[in-house]
Structure formats: structure tokens, C-alpha cells
Length: 209
Image (cartoon, rainbow, N blue to C red; front, side, top):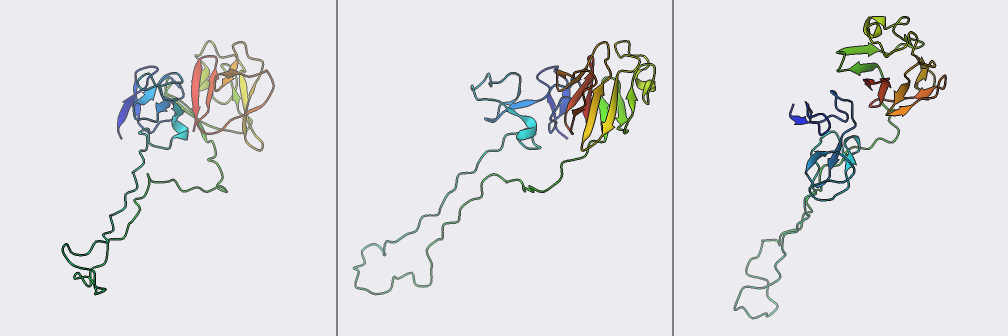
């Protein structure tokens, strides 16, 4: 697997990542081929950056292959007078133009169900938490105290995981807040999340897998 540098923290990450597994930032890239960048505009060419998750599984931008057609010759042999006779190259057919395929298109399955979240993963804590319906997240109580017990900014009972139509995170009026993709959640209000989202308990970030 090829490694690239995160433009936010400078750490090496796999080139098909949508989020940096070191700092948790969402990755964006230049569609003109200048790789991962910060901000909204490529500082090399001025092109608007696109989210890596919307540009395919490969962080290298796809480049369209120009469609080329082989020329078709209609001229008779030089110096031959057209008398209605068959051309001298009988049995040879003129080349047929064959369009070259564009960059490989992804198979679109509009009815395919999205991937089901299964884990919360933190590279900072080297932790992989299995999602459990109704599980509490907290420093003093809950299902993951072995992970959060030493984290001072996490409240005793900080948040709750729950499964309804989709997986949800509920902040339990924690002291330092729960964040979904950088947005602070209102206390006791369920917020749905999906694979690829970032959930943070204060500044302790987890990626949903």
C-alpha cells in the first residue's frame, strides 16, 4: 500500500484514506493531480479541491483518455484514373474508428445499502471499540471504561450509543461536549452517524468504521 503525507499533521497515511487516521481531519485533493491539500483551493493551480471520499477510493485523480479514431482513407492509388473499377487494394477494409474508453467508471448500484458502522477507532489511544446498542461512554461508568478511565476531559457518563433506523450518538450533558464531524451536539439530542464520520469526546477523536 502506497503511503502519502497528511497535509494537516504531516504523518504518513495510506493513499486511499478518506480521513487522516492520525489527526482525524477529512482529506481533500486536487482534481488536477497535485495530491492532498488543505483549504478549499489548490495552491499550485487554483483548482477547487474535492473531498477524497467523493473522488473514488484512489487519491490519485483520474485522467480521461482522449477518444481517438483511426483515419479512413478514401483516396485511390496515386496516379490511377477513376474508371469505376474496384480499387487495387481489394480485400483490405478501411480501418474502423474504435472509441477509446474513458477513465474506468465505477459500477453504480443505486439500491445498494450503505455500509453498516461497526467500530469507533482511535489512532491516538490505539483503540478499536465495537459498537453496542445502548452502550455508555464515560470515564467512571459504561462499557468502555478501560479506554476512557484515564481520560480527564471525558465526563463520568459522557455519551450513549444507540441503534434505531441508524446508529446514533447522544451527548449526556457532558462537561466538555461531544462532537460529530466538528459540530458540537446539543445535550440529550440523538445525532445519526455513518461510516467515515468523526466523533470526538472533547478533543479525543474516533473514526467510524
